[in-house]
Image (cartoon, rainbow, N blue to C red; front, side, top):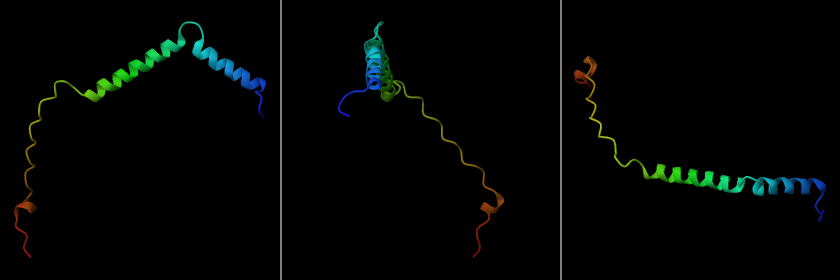
Length: 72
């Protein structure tokens, strides 16, 4: 149990190739992560120009049953 079996070595080699393989894959992954973080921060800042305030909605007309006073 203390030593690595062949399947462990294969998995370890695969992870190392993924991270340090040719073509700068690690730097590409970090660049994509940085772009995502930057977009998240920009989304938290909100819009620089807030949208104009909406005009209030007029109330609905009262029905006949609402116009009559309630008799108790």
